[in-house]
Amino acid sequence: MEHRWNPRKEMDSRVTVYRHGLGDFMAAVKNISAEGMLVDTGQYALPKGVMVELAAAALDGLQSSLLRLRALTVHADDDGAAGLMFIGDKRNIAALFKNLENQLVAQSAHTEIRVPAGA
Image 1 (cartoon, rainbow, N blue to C red):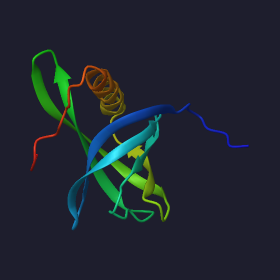
Image 2 (cartoon, rainbow, N blue to C red):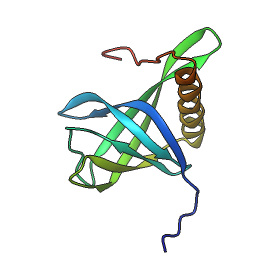
Image 3 (cartoon, rainbow, N blue to C red):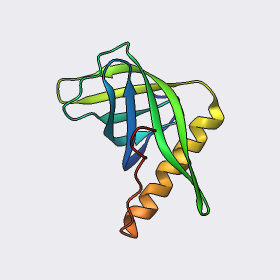
């Protein structure tokens, strides 16, 4: 039986992942907790031990900005799944969680939220 300090919340959202030397790509967020997230990287491999930067659109009313957060790859499999452990400011983690939830609400209203290219 697997024991976790923080429960996971299932997600169907997207986040931009930046890996030094590879550039950025979109990943599907499968679940998230206060300590990390599981993403589907598709064709991009994130080997265990690699540091990445995550970016998501932060929406506050009519204003938008880019929320960035560092994470360490702690799990990777051959199917493109990567377990990322958040590194850094806990306020940014809480903001990322909130913004991914907002994406779910927007998706249910058939609105797509995208991170600007090159941000």
